[in-house]
Amino acid sequence: MPYDRRILDRQVGRNAQLYAEAVGALPSPAERYPYVRILVSLIETAHPEWGQAPQKASQISELAAALSDGTLARSEVADAVRVRDEERGYGQ
Figure: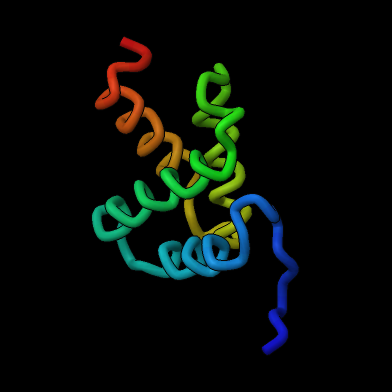
């Protein structure tokens, strides 16, 4: 089955891109939040070089927005990244 869009990030892959599009289609940020966290985890796994980058939240949110075809807000994803980092004890 051919896809309308090409893979945006080969490290993250097609499945994560399709997942991001599906998450972005959910109606509210509250409903999307747990799925956004999973997407952030997928991106972090695919891009370990971003782990300690000062612009980590920005880099991940830009990629997530692109993967979702613009349906996920960058700020929503960046907030999920910051919460995950705080839970891990980073940035405190």
